[in-house]
Structures are given as C-alpha cells and as structure tokens.
Length: 515
Image (cartoon, rainbow, N blue to C red; front, top):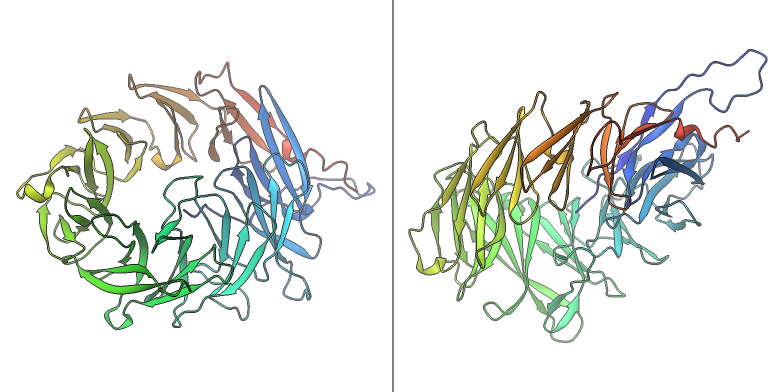
C-alpha cells in the first residue's frame, strides 16, 4: 500500500497592516500542504515558515505544536503519515534550482510533535514513497510522473529504516525499464513481519515494477541482493501488480504472480534458492488466462493450487492449476473486472464485480475441483456500481450516484441508503459496527449502525474540506477550507450539533511570536 503524498498547494491569506507598522508575520502568502492523519491528530506543513504544525484534538480543546523542518534554502515537497499513523514524514528539497550544495532530506517526526525528528539523507528529490505493511521501511522513488529535475536517475531509490536512523541509496539492476511502482508482496499482515521462505531461508522481498520487467530485492540482505526478471517487451507485457503465494504441500516453492496491464497472460515467477547459499533466483513462466486478465487471486482446494483470474472481456472466472496450467472457466453472467476472497461458512468464497456493473457475483469455492458447472449467485445493485469499498469480511459499501448500498454477504442482503447529495464511499471509516461518512464539498456528517442499518446525520455550518477519523480520541474531525485553520470535532457515537465543537485560528497559533 502506498499512502497519498500531500503535495504542495497554495492558500493565500492577505492580512492588511498599517503603512508604518513593523513587519507582519502574517503578511504575504500563507502556504499549507493538505493535512495528513495520524492516530491522534492532524498534521499540516507550513513551508513558508519551514515548520510542521501538529493539531491534537482532546475533549473540547485543541493543542497546537510547531516543529522546524528544513531551512530558508529548502522547501517541503510532500508529506505523508506512516502506515501505523505514529509518525509523519516530510521530504525537503532545494527551494530553487539555483540553490547548490543542498541535500535532499527526509524528516520523520513523532505524531504528537514532541521530541526531535530523525533526519535521513536521501540524495534525490523523490516524488513517491512506498511504506511496508510491517511498518519497518519506506522506499522512496520517482513515480510515474518522474521528476522536474533537469536530469535524474529514474531507477534510483532510497530504502529508509523507519525503526532506526539508517538509509540505503541504491540504483536498481534491471534491463533498462523505468521504475513505475513498488510493492511488498510477501507482507500480508499489517504490522507483522511475514518473511518469504525460499529453500527454508527467510527473505523480506520488495518488488519493483518497471517497463516489461520486475526487479526483486531482499531487503534483509546486507548486500541488498537483486534479481531482475524480464517479462517480454516483445509481447507488450507491462507489469501492473503482483501477488505472492507462499509455498506449501500442494506447490512447494513460493510463486510471485505478475498481472499485466494488457494481454492474455499472467507472469509466474517461481522463487528458488541458488543452492550455494548466495541468495535466490526466479524461474519464469507465462500462464494463458483467456482473452484478458484484469484481476487475480490464488486459492488452494484440497488437492489443487489454483490461480483465479477474471476475464473481463468474457465476464468469467478462469481457474488455472499452476502445476500443469490446465483449468476451467466459470461464466458469471454479469460484468466483472475485480476480485476479492472472503471466508464464508467455514470455506472460501470469491466475489467479483465491475465499476459500472449492476450485479455482484459470488461463487463458493469448497470442492470446486469436483463441481464443474457450479453457478455463481448474484446480488443486484439497481442503480449500478460507481465505487466499492470492502468494510470487513462480511460487508461492502457501494457508492452509486445519490445512493449508498450496504451489502451483507452472509444475509445476502442489499440495503439502499438514499441521500440528497452523493457520498463518496472512499471517504468512510468503519469503527466496530459504526460506519462513518463524510464527503468533501458537502455539509453533512453521517453515521450508520450496521446492526440496525439506522442512519443518523448532522448538518455542519460549513462545507467539508477533508473528512478524518482519529482512532486515538475516537473522534471524527472535519476540516473546512480556511488558511487560518477551521475544523469541527464530532463524536461518532453521538453525532449532533450539541455534542460537536468548532475551532478556528489554530494554524496561526505561534506565528505571532515569530519576528
């Protein structure tokens, strides 16, 4: 998972001063990066003053702290929260191309703003960061948009130790493809180390996806051992994402599947040890999976290790035995582009859907190898699927124009929630059985009790700029567009105007003290 980087945006605050008044710290532009969310608060970057501003709601009050970042020769390019929301990252770069001998640095601040930051020399103005699910590392790189630099190394990366102070600056050893994205395919449990066992040896592998190739790197190897795998530029194979299947009794070696942005094949990289203790390598094969493959998962039946892909052109699931590449097709009878796997009745169930489609398809996988002809079930979404968000194993939230649908898979129930204005389901949070909703540009905050499906809404005084849920204080925090700082704190268990609190001007606290 890559968190959104908060890039620079400019909000101008012009405050008038008398002609003979002393210099006003408020005068001129007041530039803020959009806030990032931590467990206990919101964090803004104030590039004009080279400061990070920590805003911590507690009870009816708000505490504001400021910490220095960079200096007058640098500017903050972007900021982001770590996946555990316990730290905030900010990358400083030279303020101007005319500035020389200024190093790019990544700052890691405690989320509460207390204590000194850890500073890493990262050597380049990277535009993207991938954060490992085990919370140990950040990998900085140049994303698909590249860099504004006159000349930059597109395959340069920085591997940052988020638990310490170390950083490794590396160039990928590939076949000339430009790095597009970074993934951690072996890490499937948030906050836990899940190494990949190859020949009985544990490896922490990152996958670097480039044009027509994948580079694998063992992050725990002091030498940062790399394995570059070409996947076929001649057939237009363009890696889009990866999926790791650990080795087991059905297929002994771990396999990394690579989905292409186009084409009818999935790459399969079987990871094996070198035999001399020097590391690992990959055996390459291409699996034919129908006309196209827009998404994939793996599933082990009692006797067969399957790769399940969705053929969007045919509206079907394709089951492939990864040992023999033999398999079968299950027509869905409805549009499908995306998949996910859920636990159902002690077994597994695959769920398929498509943006713009009007049905969700489900297929029970128990005994699937002996049940050819098994037909999927369907749940109707009357007004179509704009967005789908998985809430938990049993429920999804669907946005569809001015409606939200809560889908309960065990009950096979679809509940529509009508609204006067569209809600964005991606701006939701699930806390137990409480669904919290708020959408930028609207003036309503809503909660839904998923046990009773009873919604409650409260009207705000101002439009929502950003909607945040803070798990520490268990509060909804809604920001409103105002460079001075304007937010509303809402109790999600009792969302009402009488229990909410409005705060203004907190982003200006401490500025008066500056000369």
